[in-house]
Image (cartoon, rainbow, N blue to C red; front, side, top):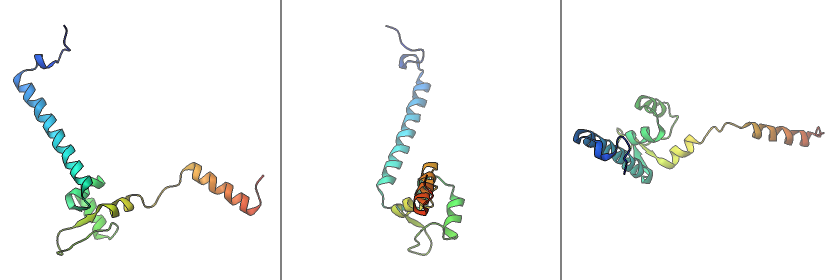
Length: 114
């Protein structure tokens, strides 16, 4: 029976410890993300992770009123996940096929269709 070069049998204790720690970190990250997806209201840090933006960029978005946010006690910022989703999906960019369809519809309506 042959094993790959880096099989579990060939790992030292230190290498196994590092591998276990790496997998534990990955699991913690996945659990955090899963919990965040189940929450309706996100705190500032969770919203930054959810939106994949830096903290400074999120502060700028909230201070300019670009993104919907809540301050129930006047200090901490909170965000509704559904409102963040709507904001993320706003300002849709038309695809080439969308534009071609609009041109076709315009030609039909104006009587220029060939």
